[in-house]
Length: 384
Ligand SMILES: Cc1cc2nc3c(=O)[nH]c(=O)nc-3n(C[C@H](O)[C@H](O)[C@H](O)COP(=O)(O)OP(=O)(O)OC[C@H]3O[C@@H](n4cnc5c(N)ncnc54)[C@H](O)[C@@H]3O)c2cc1C
Image (cartoon, rainbow, N blue to C red):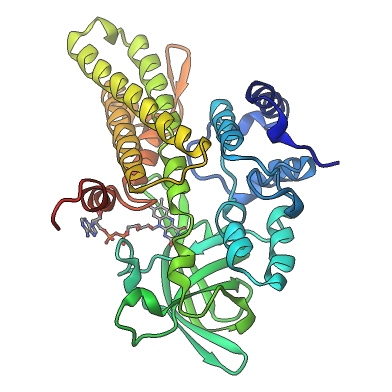
């Protein structure tokens, strides 16, 4: 029987989610700092799937929980509180909602249940070696040939492509438009299709977090086009502001602050006025971040859509997170540059990985420089 979680009070829903995570989430996967791989998350996915909790915001008739924005935020807060790690869930968070909104009935029937069950694992093929911030300049081409589009080009930074079975790929279908955004289309690509080569890229921390993906005469059935031909830009950008809210949550910086407090206590640094000054400034920054986040959350709860000013949240959270992990590394002294979990007065802290994982925060989800451009253009309305 389908439950109406939105009918529960916030407190009752929170208690239920918390109890579930505490009882069922594998303890060895709590708070892992790197991107979790599919083989380690699959068992947890199966538990979520059995409970019907894989897709919190998907509609109930599609197998989701049907949560409204306020219940979804509680779900996310409880995940973060218990250290529940994000599985490779782009099928649920990104392409699933895109298919629901822009896809054909056949695409919905085929892809949505398989994303839910974990049979299909999705990755995002947007960025190219010369098209990141300036994504509209992308050059990977898709050309109609009979009943197929033939894709040629190269994608990069495709997160966990090596775990994926499918990729949603932005391509150029019309090179001759006046506005570059107008000749772009989005395709659903099965990674088993001949002509696809993956080359993993190892990040600073030594993890193969993403891949270069080469498309060499890859034939994709024309039914795999999502939305209208040449209209992929608006399809691709449809979900950005909620992603920025998720990235802007204060939980990651708050967790780093907690670690900083443990290390500083173990090292007797709270007696040092110099440290205390820097710590207090950062603590207040996290408080500010919490208030800012709360403001946007209230906006979403009230049913309002988010404006360009949500960029401010992304800038502040990632910036504060980096400053915190820098201070954490500094106060950890020689322990801070050693790989793995170190013992600080009985508390385990992985300083180096904390530092590493905060680095790309100012790049992904739209770099902080780009967010500043958005703020200056659309919020402050400064002349460009
Ligand atoms: C951890 C991680 C995971 C990622 N996962 C994926 C994924 O799964 N799929 C995918 O498609 N992509 C992914 N990306 C790629 C990401 O979207 C791009 O890295 C990002 O858009 C920036 O593009 P770029 O790397 O080409 O840098 P560039 O766009 O070349 O930017 C380089 C620098 O110049 C600055 N800059 C660029 N343009 C301007 C401007 N107009 N004004 C001011 N400053 C500017 C940028 O802020 C940056 O500091 C991921 C990136 C990271 C770090």
